[in-house]
Each structure stands twice: as structure tokens, then as C-alpha cells.
Image 1 (cartoon, one colour):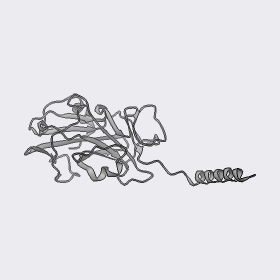
Image 2: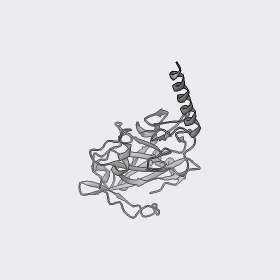
Image 3: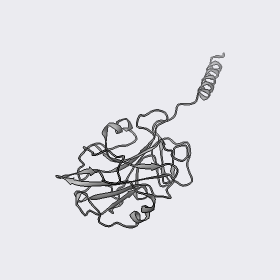
Image 4: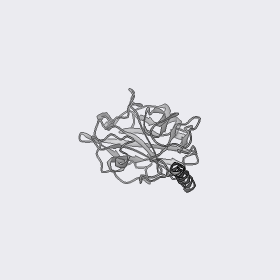
Length: 233
């Protein structure tokens, strides 16, 4: 269910019972979102809320497997001019599991349904990315929460499927664990070209960039000169 800007203060201030398991996730109005190069994140970036397959723990060594293991709950609506990504996801009970529920009035661009079932105990992440195909320009950030309160512990519970479940605020400001990229002034795994003075989220290059042709030529010339010197009697 998309959030309009003038509703945001109310959503952040209240943690009252709502319809089904409501999760307010994404960024806040004043958050600073940067790329690895230190520029503002553009409209080409996407934000998703989801989990990974049971038994799989994402880290910087298995990024090639992330896309295949990812279990999407919902995509976020990113406003690039305002640097704001926000969504409200509803989860309802489906037997012992949880299922995403489409809001009747606020998810016009969302799919009609999500076939995936989510189990209590699954860890939830926010994944920001320029694209999921890994190349020399791909940038990602993956964060989650491992705190002790309902807003900082980003783990699904059976209670989220209750009709009057308490709303969770799983926003970047409540995340405390960075798997990849930067979070709240802390740069985690990944490659960066710049370190902003302050940031809420910073994406990182998934693999180190290939040196530019000019740099490569200079390195080759330097190596050749060194080799010639060694061969002189």
C-alpha cells in the first residue's frame, strides 16, 4: 500500500494496531541515499523487501547466488527527486505461514498476488540495487535488523498474520545490520569511490571496477621498462 508524503508523520509516530500484519518499510523524508561514487541515488535504482531461501545466508562471498535465492515480499515506490523510498506491506495468515495481501486502494501498480508463502522465523531484508545482473557497474546495498524491539528485529512472526497485528516500522533508521553497502555512516562490504560525510544508505559496487584503458596501458609500459632493466648486463 503506497504511502503519500503527507501521511508519513502519522505513520512514523504511531504504532497502533492495523489491518493484518502491516510493515512500514523504506526510508524517511530526511534520509540521505548515495551511490558508491557519493552521488544521489537516481530513479534507475530499485528497493525491495524480502527474504532468502531457508538455509541461505547472504554475504559478500556469495553475491552471485542472491538473485536466485531471493524471495520478494514487495517492491518499494522510489521518488528520486525527493530521495524517498517507502511502502506499506500487508501480511495475512495462510495456515501456519504468511502471505502478502494486495491493498484494494493503494497498490494499483502492484501485482494482484504474491504466490510465495513466508514462514515465521524468516529474516527480512531491504535490498537496494541498480540492477541484479552483476557487472562492473552493478551497485547494491542489503540491510536488515537484529535488534530487540519489534521495529529493530526484522524477523517474521506468526503474530504478523493476526487481523489486529501491531504495525512494524522496518525503515532504514531502524536497521542495525549491513550485509552489503553502507548503512547509517558505516560502510560495509563492497567497493566505494567516495565516503560521504553522512549517509543513511550507500550502495557499493558488487565487484571492483576494471581499470580504465589509459591506466592499463601505463601499467603495461611500466612493467615492460622494469623487465628491460632487469635484462641489462
